[in-house]
Length: 375
Image 1 (cartoon, rainbow, N blue to C red):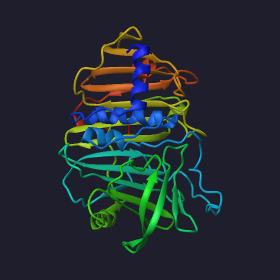
Image 2 (cartoon, rainbow, N blue to C red):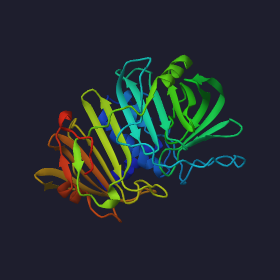
Image 3 (cartoon, rainbow, N blue to C red):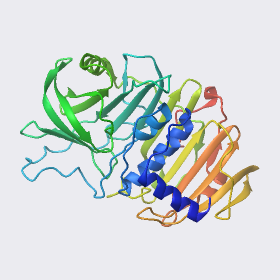
Image 4 (tube, rainbow, N blue to C red):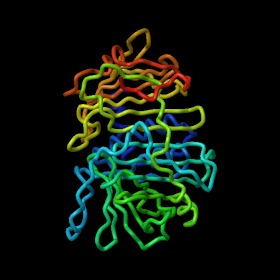
């Protein structure tokens, strides 16, 4: 893609939203990750729910804040309780799942962090107005203002922030206190005006929230159906081996489950003090089953062979707060489509070196995939 084309794309995406598109779960996941990077850089959007693919993009995290740390509370907010240890969840094993929905769920989008989990349940029809968003936080990640008017969760630096406006008490959820929410923003809350939303404690100092386009009774039933700590580990079609020590911690896993279509995104590195367009010193890898040909390579990109596979290498320049990064893409390597993004400076390896020497492809059959993508 030409540098000018890339900049035009950024400007167009920042100014307006794309029209409704056919369902493309892999594309939705990839676009969602790119929106996540723009959000970390402080770029705002105003999305509209139009189709499942668009919903996947919208719900990937539509609001931003350009400062690091927790969402900034009012000046009179009481001091937060002591934070529990940060590393509670294993991002490779989603901590929670819903056992009930008012519609038949055919696609699940997930965003899994060490301290939080976001799940988006979507129906089969692109024209359906039904959807569900679930966010679950580890202990010590949320606290309720003394006035019970706001619930503050997560961290902007870790892309898990949520600021919820409490409108009043809700019926208990499995014996735990709950509140109706009217208005929310942050990384793990949807920018959709419709829907009922409830936040509740699911354990001591542990909070979760559910928003659904159905009735208040539907939202409460979904919340009561959540199952914690009893889910299966994700399976990955790749294995990364002999990585530098700075890339052996999992910051985030994005995943799509839609019948036979399963897509994964890994963000590896160490938790930074703040986030920009890509986490500093990080490796981001998107992988899925090919659904079509990729974009043609232009003068800002070159095609080469690595281990017998045709790949495209591209250097994306810094632009409006987006840090420069290097990218490797391939439309079909052993039945897999891949994208590797690495910041342009301060990292031990390039995307080409990772692909050539540190990546094992396991093919498109999920029976051959692994639950341990880093070894």
